[in-house]
Amino acid sequence: MKIKKKYFYWSLVLVFILILVIPKISFQDGDASASQANRNAAVEVEVLIVQASELSENLVLNGSLRGDEEVELRPEASGKVIEINFDEGERVSKNDLLVKINDADLQAQLKRAESQKNLAEDKENRSRQLLEQDSISQEEYDNIKNELNARSAEIDLLMAQIEKTEIRAPFDGIVGLRWLSEGSFINSSVSVALLTKTNPIKVDFALPIKHANKVNVGDVVKVIVPNSEEIYSAKIYAIDPKVDPSTRTLQIRALANNPVGILLPGSYAEVELVLDSKLQGVSVPTQSVVPDIAGEMVYLYKNGKAVPAQVKLGLRTSTEVQIVEGVNPGDTVITSAIIQLRPGVDVSIRNYR
Image 1 (cartoon, rainbow, N blue to C red):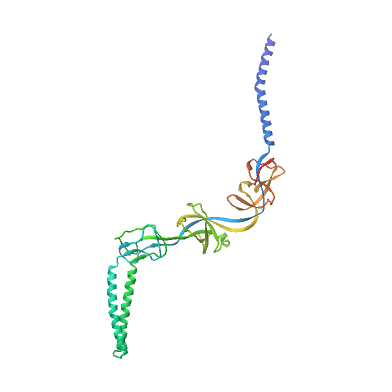
Image 2: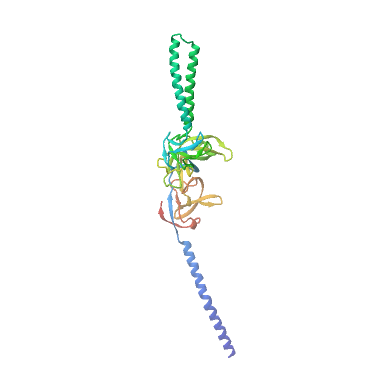
């Protein structure tokens, strides 16, 4: 009886062990089968049939905008402001009178000088007639003539001094904020306002010296500013003949039309130059290039397989990269699911580009 009970006990233990182990074995077998099925499934990809094309070498640089003309309005003479003839932010024309300084004393001196000149002219006229009649000597006439010339010079001097009491616009432009009021006493150290000509507008940027021989006066560049989605064109008109020793760059200046005033002086701009637009080659999307220990590579689609190809890269843009070696026109480059690819893995084409 004891033997039978012992066998019965061990039979129960064996059954319990089998109950625990058999499901795990079945589950592992199922995982292995599923893993094998996944390995055998083809990866769906998008591909690009490479074609030869004409490429361009573009360079994007930081630039800044500057008014075509810009001047700080200051008086030449000291005195009290009696007129301000502009509104802040107003467009003005060349020679418009903007500010007038009190010139009452100069006007009084001018009237006296003009009266004295009239007397000198009459005296010179009579003296000339007497000289023709030999009633006076040539020396006496010359002294009277010199007096007339002195009166004329005195008037010219007063007119120049009166002109200095006027601040006129030196060019067409927009007047900025003014820093004085009528009744203010000003001198040459006081700034009245800033006058800026905004059309056309200057675009300044620095070009790395290695590209100096690829840019010339007359070349057109693209200009992009943060406050507008429009792309503007500017023509290079000046290149600094000296390299900046601190940055090893050349300062370049271009002009852009700005009739509406969207381009604001002092603001930041991106400047894009086309350095070479006649390069022949092939290009692929940037995401299709895979870093590798030996350099870079792409996956080619060949007979349903992903085949790696080592490549040498050339020019880059934000979306494409030039392939100098390793890919030829007509090759099919895989452009999607790059992370899932391994050499020789099965692939199926989902879409052509």
